[in-house]
Image 1 (cartoon, helix red, strand yellow):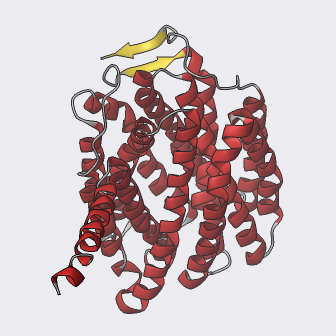
Image 2 (tube, rainbow, N blue to C red):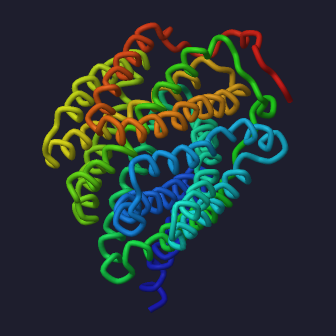
Length: 410
């Protein structure tokens, strides 16, 4: 009996060791960061699926009012310079934890909005949390990565992970709306962001070089300008395309959920290839091709006369949107490590200058001219993006000291 029992002990020990290795791998900083990003994007997926129908059907919002709400929400992105000031005194992972907690609280407040003022407050609160987390997440990812190829692949995989989380949020909304109504789904959405904050407690990253600073450098000027243009394009996509489908074609939340789901599936499939294309062909080539593709897409939005065409163009447009990760990898390739967080935050702030202005202008144009004019104008933005991208100096591995800063404050 003893002899028969002995062979089993190593198996049990081996099983325990394997379980310990798996458990340890799940507790790595990268796994904790991935968990935070995944949970947050489930909440974001729920909010994105329900928000437009909630705003149109429950609050009866107009295009001009939507533009105002979005402009104020996006104005929270202009706080990113303050983020860098905080980051000089707080570990990035702690700041990210606070940001996700604030985002969750704001989403919960959305469920209590009964008019434009309360909608603005809730949107601004979760916007501050999201826009604080936005520049920190890629910075932490880049620190956890290795060489340039590994960092590009890591960013691509996390982008794909975010796209997987979106459909989960969509399915959650479709399951919960019959039980809770559109208003009731925002509390669970906020809860997922709070789960993300808990995951961030497991992120520990080594600090490399100096602490983050306020810094705007001449050598990164193409990045700032392209993020400014990217902010305008982003607002057209995420705000006014979905609003057109709901307000003009009266799409239900189920329809919105299904085409957002289809969009997420295509984006998930495309995201890993984006990282590989950046590694193989470089940031300029990837950004140039994506800008060129946007021109006919925006013209298509402007000429469309059916819900199906608008939805099909949106799905393709959203997949192409993943190419903007090339702007982040361009910075990571050319900037010294101590400049990366500050440069990404400055780019996010620049991005939100146009994100604030475009909703106001587009909402006004919608009211005065009609929604088709917005998308024809956006085609001009895509042309500008293409021209600027072709002037982008190919990214180089970090090999020389940083240029003298135009603005520098500790």
